[in-house]
Every structure is written in C-alpha cells, then in structure tokens.
Length: 412
Image 1: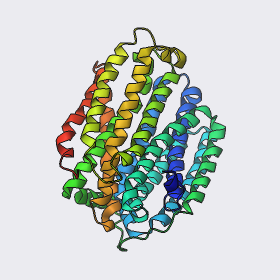
Image 2 (image 1 turned 30 degrees about the horizontal axis):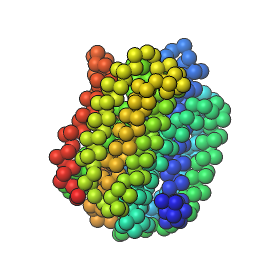
Image 3 (image 1 turned 45 degrees about the vertical axis):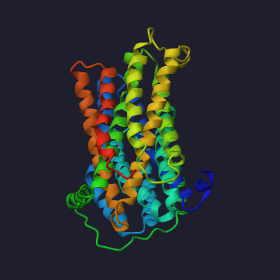
C-alpha cells in the first residue's frame, strides 16, 4: 500500500482527490456553521433549511452535467483535465472566501454550486484514469484507497469547517486548492483511447451515458448497487446528529464520533478488500458484505434501545458497554460497506471499453445523485409521518437483501 501511495502513477492523483473532497466539505460546513451560529442564530428552522438547500445545490451539477463530464474525460487527456479543474477550484475558493468574509448567503450558495461542478468534472477522472496507470493487480487497491480516502476527507473537512472561524476557513480553502493544483501537476499523462467530438448538450450527453451503461448488464447492476450504497451512506450520515441528540440524548461530540466511526470503517473496508480478494476484480464478497451491513443495522437498533440513560457527552457515552456496542455496529457496518462497494467500482472500470470508461463512471454518478436525493427525501417523509429514526434506519439497511440476486450475476 505504501509503495503505491509513493508511486508517481498514483500518489499525485490520490493527494489531488483527497484535497478536493476535503475542500468541498470544509467550505460547506463553514457555511452551515456561519449561518447556524451567526447569520440565523435566532432562526433554527431557516438555518436547517439553508443546510438542506446547500446539499441540494451541491448535488444538482451531478444530475445536470455528469454526462458532459464523461464526454470530456473520454475525449481529452485526463491529467490535463485534472490540472484545469484544480485551477478552477482556486478561483472558486477565492470567491468562497469573499462570500464567507461578506457573510453573503446567496454568493456562498453560488460557490457551493461551482464546487459541485468541480466535483462533477473531476469524478470521472479519478476513477477512469486508474486503469491507465495501474497494473491489473493494483487496480482494486488503488480504487479502494481512493474511495476510503474520500470518506476520511469528508470527515476531516467537516471537522475543520466546524472548528475554523469563517474568516480563517476561506483562506485555508484557497491554500488547500493551491496544494491540490500543485499535486495535480505531477499526475502522469493519460491520453484518451480515441479523440472524438464532445457532445456539449447536457441532456443528450447524459442520455448517451445512461443508455450505454444500462445496455451492459454488468454496468447496470454495478451502477444500481453502488448507488444503493451511497444512498444508504447519505441516509446514515445525514441522521447521525438527530440519532445522537434526539434518540440517544447525546452531545454533538457523540454525533461526530458516529461520523468518525463510519468514515474510518469505510476507509478500512475499502483499503482492505484488495487483500481479501488477492487483487482480483471479483464481487464474490459483496453479497456477504451486504448481509453483514443489514445485520449490523439490526444490532444497532437493539444497541440503541439498550442505552437506558441519556448518552451524554463522549466520555459518558463510552463509559457504558452499550455505547461501545453502538460504535462497534457502526464500524462493522461501514467496513462491510467498503468491502461491498469497491469491487463494484472495479466492475465499472473493467466492464467497458477504454474509450467509454469515463461515460460509464459519469452514468454511475448521475444515478448515485438521484438515489441519494430520493433516499434522504424518503427518510424525511417517513420520519415526518411518525416513524422512529432507528426503525427507519433498520428498514433502509435491510433493502440490501433485494440486491443479492443482482450481485450474484456479476463476475465472481
């Protein structure tokens, strides 16, 4: 693992994508904290609404422009695209720093949208470039490291965005963007398999990407299963605060602990699945990992009910065996999630011809975004109608059983 991280074929890309994911979440979290604790401190409903709007604004470009991003990535050198995207990120973060300094909500939401565009264009690059630079036996490890690092970057970005004052978060975001650009300059060239004209029509490009992906059985199944995983992750991470505060009587520190356990667990599972599979692209462990996720969700339900007293702060929470049980369930669920999803990305990278690989990743990103939005809305509707949060989470986790027949059709 260390050898691959230090190799120029992978290291610069790893650093570039890590810093990009970190910056996305640093800025979004800094905005949410600025609004919640300063701009709308006397309007909690408005603050919560803006946080939801910011999430939607960030996801919107994935739905609108992923098709075009896939076209660009298939038609141009991927390393060159990465460098240009990082230059754009510097400009976006400069605008973001101004938005935070001016305490302008509209301008900050524009920056959130632009960062969504940045991530939309870079998304196909970071996965489609790996088969060009890595040997077949390294591909699963590289993919796992990228996915695991993404979750850790999200965690660290959210923590930094919550801790740093708005006046400091802006300049830090600019610095991180510059470091990302410097790292991207060392990514080796990754020319396209064939230079073709780019279809700049977002609707037509998305339709083409989705049509190609869903016409291929392996791509279709992998896309649906990966999108389910990201939707479940969005459901859990969006509900950690209400789960900790409302259902367990815990502090914000307990909610952060939940997010840390989940992020680290996904990173461990993502990085370790290559060793379990001997570096081979195989989904034979994915059905079992999905079932482990469902069982961990069931035990989480009973562990939460076992907290007979309020969870309190982190120290109080960890002083009880039931607290450690909750934490272990989240960690096991997340590790299984990493084992479940990374081989599916390997299928996306290898089940299509090189000339259309980025479009396959783009189609996956479109479906991912749609699944995440639908899942969060569905969970919100269920809770608003009186369903308890633990019950909703266990029901969401059990939907993995529906995927097992599909997973058995993939390469084993």
